[in-house]
Image (cartoon, rainbow, N blue to C red; front, side, top):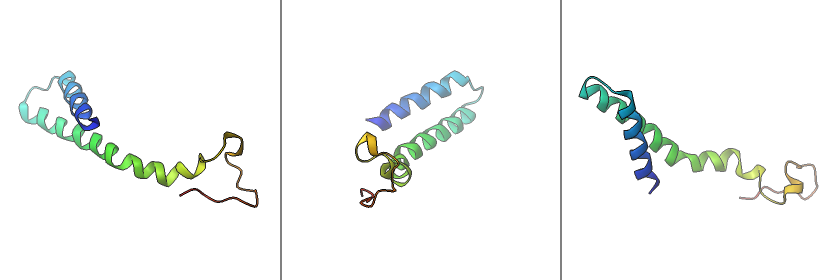
Length: 74
């Protein structure tokens, strides 16, 4: 579902650029689709690698690794 939304957004953004030649239009559309798919596929990995461990638990204990019972949730 998200991929279809990304295809639609990429098409609309490329249409707004108003390219003179079809080959330039196709190249621009291909780059946008590639970037949207990259963001779609790898956003979960970036979230797990950089953000997930920092925001687990209760809001009052965010960013307090100094407690003796600190374990990162996996």
